[in-house]
Length: 129
Image (tube, rainbow, N blue to C red; front, side):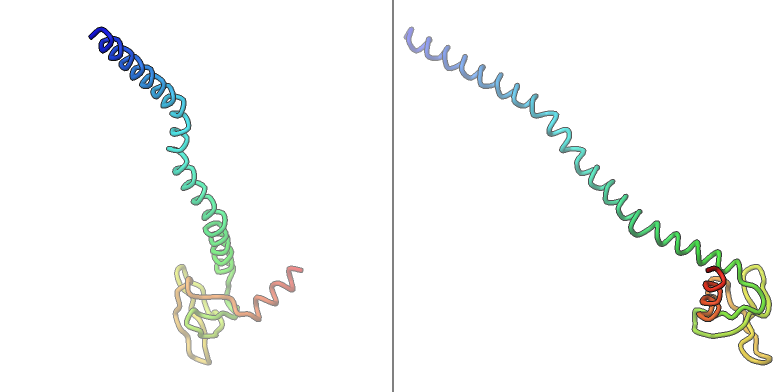
């Protein structure tokens, strides 16, 4: 009976030692799991940054150039509408252009749907050089 009590005491001491060492291992691994917790958020932030610099920012620059070009259009400039109609600007209003398509034929077109004709674009590039 005494031997059984001693063996029971030794077993409980071993179990306590194992629990203590497992708790120590868990606390030493806690910083690693804390970093792993933020690793997903860091990856998402990096993906957003990549999308911004490779996709969104260049598109915004292109739209800014187009906006400046449309603001610079004046009467007499050759233009192409988004629908593919070629014409010459007859007058400029706040939100639209009045475009002369043919003799006596004028159409009202929103400013957002007008582009510089290729001939005028080439001439502007040559003047800029």
